[in-house]
Image 1 (tube, rainbow, N blue to C red):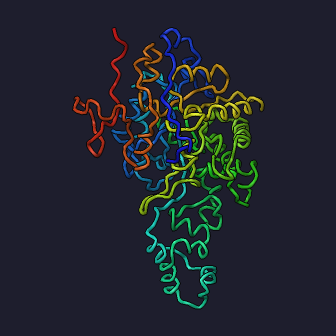
Image 2: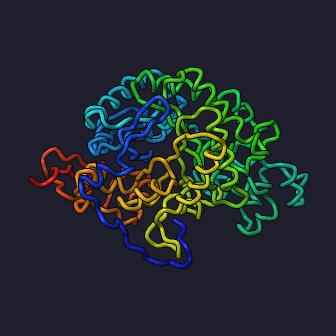
Length: 486
């Protein structure tokens, strides 16, 4: 992952922990309405991809165990990982693109309800993503995958040569010389791996996305509703399809790109279709970016506009993230795909303990506050959720008290200690396993390995009932908290 050049090392700073009475009387542990639903507290665990499903996208026993551990901590809201809305292979990621997934998701909803004693509301993050290919072996790419165009022939001065000669010439050239022969997209496919873009409107299935995606999202939301999941979070963030429509880099010329009004059009149409299908009494919101953090990408003025439009359309909550884009991803190894959390935008999404003068904690709070202000200035009270480096009670409570958010979530801190909220609310904050922000977990995610935390994944490995990861070296869930000392 990219690191700030300052390379300043930070230790976690959770601050003072509250007593049980202080926690119970706090804003963070007070209830809040999300559309037709009431959360028992303003605490939230956002979506994290744990690589616990299988190639078919089923809810496995490991998936159930993963969410059960967070539910025992009784957050107000818990979001199921990014779940694919298409019925297509997507590796060991959850899917919701067919009715056959409903029974498994229903069991997941029941598991969370039981483990949290009804205190946690469960949401599912619904995602669409475009095709991305692994970085190819250069010789194979030039031999088999590159389309030999007239422009390539002209650049080589080989207009009359046969295709085999063209390919052999290209393979013999030093890599740097290919810059003068291949165009930007061809070079990207060679050096990074092919990646579809929402602006590729010459490709029929990309051109037709506005006609296809609203129904796919709506069908997914309807399945979530049937499965007993409490609400839906539309994934409009990071490197994926809907975020790419929102991004200022979206240059489609069909009314779905260019201006802010056009870029937000499809996300609004998808939401409208979802609302039409699930009705007004089912919570639907979205997760989107305050800032893209890439050259030519969207910033806070854009996200503030989008937030007001989402609120105006009737979304029940707005969850904010930042960065995590493909545009600045590092070059992957041959045979691997680009990972959108390796560049600066990826760092801003998941900042680590090696940072700059600002530090890794709370980098999205002020941008989030600006977005929330835009929603309030537009006349809406839609709850705004912020996350990002919060790992102590004082910080979470202060964000709420200062009106910078309505709900505060924790992701990596929740992974470090799934019982975080339970411990803090019980006045046992001193027992919290505090995240060190080494991004050990992110490294596992990048390698598509089952995600765990280094603070607990090798503890009590031989204890009864402990399940291990596929490599047999780590436990799959954190040790359960025994509760307050008598």
